[in-house]
Length: 385
Image (tube, rainbow, N blue to C red; front, side):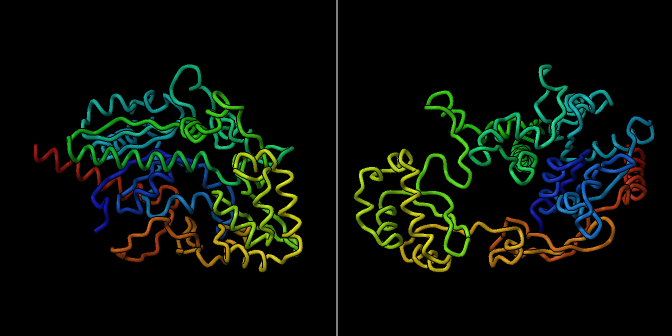
């Protein structure tokens, strides 16, 4: 039995944050009914990388039912009301206020259905000062200051994946699970709200503390760590980059002896502590580079392994595809093809879930079936009354 078997989730969702949240719920056994416009979730058109289908949509919509509705029309609004009345969880990530104007705001729904868990995902929240702002991942990266501390010394950079959307989806997933646990005890649902900006701001706590209470926010340092040294990428004789991480002074001594093969470096007062090494980073990195540039990456890694120093190759996406730690699953696209993507990150070591090929749904693929199913349920309730 799946952990969320029997849980019904209705989601008016688009793009990435809400679909990722509901994708995780679906993987755990919940039935997810995805409500879309007739033209579909606009993420369906982001790219054609997944055998002609969208990579974003394929990743985050496996195993869902798709119902195409215009809930401003009475017939469709009636069906949506029937779905929500039966739902355990209702999620939406339209613009702030859009669902309330349509008659499906979380306040009204919670009043009508006390056991319902509602979740509103927004860009910046619902306050008058920010609710008008359109919010997409890259914009949130910029507004939250994340891009200001990311990238090289002379150039800011976007994080290479939609990290604010992903973070909001993961946070929303955790919030829904907490609310389900609370409901199992109290019998009462909950009204939840998550914004992309709040998630990004939470992640920016350390830089913000440095800015307001320390010596200023960390500067952009490329493939180096702003507050630890040596912690960064070094090039070897063959042009490869290897990231190393020295976490404490014991490791620093081992690094000098077994990797640099120069114990006297460990006695240099400029490098006597992490704070000193950070202050004298340029000189420190020159000493290390003088050694790594005489070694192949294989030789460098062998020395790091001997010393027990953490390291990792600075890999390309192509190298990720062949990484020995990469686990895969085969999933179906909304156009009927299949692609291989990374396996779910959670492994249940004492419980093997049955393997099954799941598909992302075509737009409105389940509308007729769901309409009939919930209409029949309504008739049964009327007869019972």
